[in-house]
Image (cartoon, rainbow, N blue to C red; front, side, top):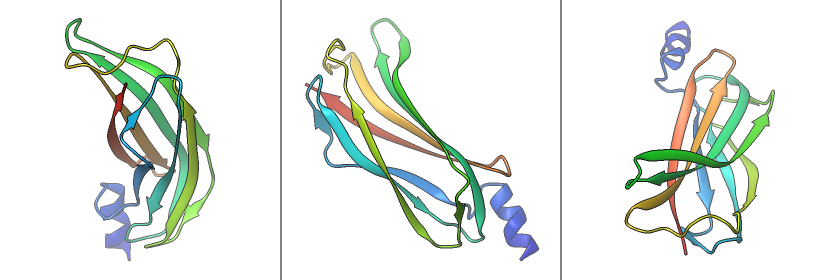
Length: 128
């Protein structure tokens, strides 16, 4: 059991997060609905928070910019191998540029535990 705990502190066998979205293409101003799927690891872990950022990358200008962010503070204890869902919704701004070869969008999601370990997920979306 101690070996499992130390492995999870290193990120091996720790809980994982995945942002599940209904589709990959959205219109400017549209609501994005989905959920965070958290799958418990080899041991029980205490969650601290979930951070999810909608990022825009502009290859032409060489910049990456945060468009919107969601932060969920929680004290949920995820049991070993447990599946846990948390609803997610975000309204796209009406003022952002559409996706092109130079402009792309993705959600960067991070799950943080009390022990300081993190699980990271990235989901690419297209805005038309």
